[in-house]
Image 1 (cartoon, rainbow, N blue to C red):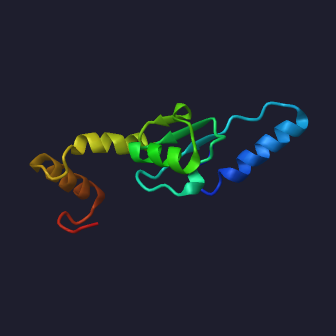
Image 2: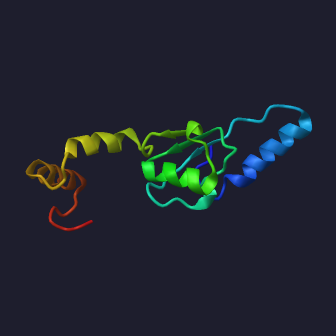
Image 3: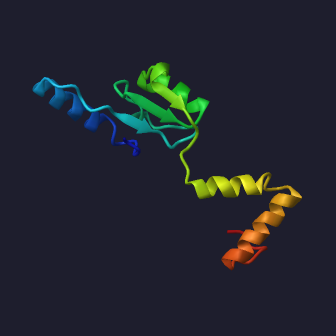
Length: 118
């Protein structure tokens, strides 16, 4: 699994070369793109077995810039820790009265000034 954009081409190339030289199948190669809208071209390699992306914009970029087949992509959003998802759900609309109250409560729990921007 590759996450940094600059670490896609070389490992994929090495896996393919070694497998070919040994007469073996190469190890499956997956890339997780953590950009939502503007992905660097080095994210996208047409030889990946699966490309996990976070948005429609990245799907289009991967097809246009990298020639990645739509069949090899999965749009799943960004992978985040469960605790972030729980807080995001509890927060709801951050500008609503409930969202503002939730933020103040979290700031109190963390010992942060409720009115200061962080």
